[in-house]
Image (cartoon, rainbow, N blue to C red; front, side):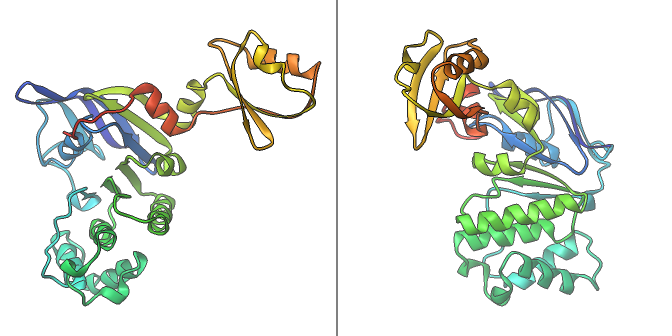
Length: 303
């Protein structure tokens, strides 16, 4: 069953078309990366999914339920903006949000301490929110989103403000949630984390879909003419081959870029006759490289 279904969703603010005929289908129990440059329409889409704002046209359903009928206890949203009460103690923040998210009253104290422990804030339970660092605040926000243990987590820039150790902590928690059958949708600019985590990727730009599908399929469909090879012998001839654009040395390996539509197998045949080939690998592009290739840089602000 689909955890989330967007059908021809559009939203404008005055003359700005923030989201333009967007379609997406997120299967239960998957991690779905929602990517795009600043101004792509990611946050607008997330706010429509959460029914904070309504689309101008199209429909959104969560676990089969449309707007006004959604079981909110099954869904939770962690916004990029921090909006927790600064004067409250951490444990009281979680207890409060547990109560308004319909967590059974007898479970709230247990879940409060469990989630503070899970995000590494148990020793700060009696501290006030205003005393937290940016990274700690982000971890508390995650615990608030998770306190009702929903089936669908929507995380907007969850890695923002985190050091590498805490990015790893979040990654581990997200993977554990997936193992429990939860569905996670997150937007991020941290491409290497999305690449480690995501089963599916939706990339949008200017409110429109650029690419959508399984991560591995997307990577295989965007393979560039690049090869990494480890060779023994005189390799000087390689850059003179008609199918080769450039050659760079990377430690003991050579990174060889081929011309458009050149066949890597043709290069391998050329090498086999003149040098000893110890390894030969057609490079898959990173998600960062695909992002830059399909979208490029943008200095706009997110809508």
